[in-house]
Length: 134
Image 1 (cartoon, one colour):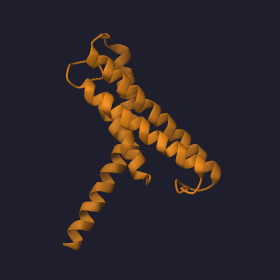
Image 2 (cartoon, helix red, strand yellow; image 1 turned 90 degrees about the horizontal axis):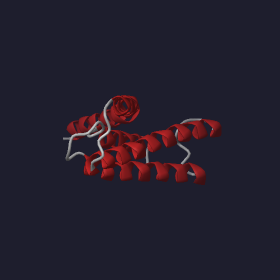
Image 3 (spheres, one colour; image 1 turned 30 degrees about the horizontal axis):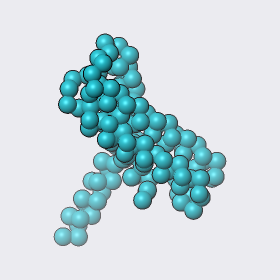
């Protein structure tokens, strides 16, 4: 029982690592490229997908800023006693959460960012979860 739980936890961490550090940046580049190249639809779902994707993008930008700030403090992403660090961290989680809500609203009709908005926001939420947020 204990080894299966250990395996499950390792699997969960692997998913968070891949989703947060690899998938989210790849989806960001792929999504913006796709959005620039395809015709823009002016439907509610396409706008919701774009807004969700924009929040996911903002969360990634904030994640990069958090890493830079954390490096300036010295060390990795373990500065949970620093008030500014935690404020950035909570804002990143909030941006990802809002992106997920808008992304879910945008998946019901085809658009250039139909799945990208949701996937990017989920990927950034995985980053925030992986780095140890509350």
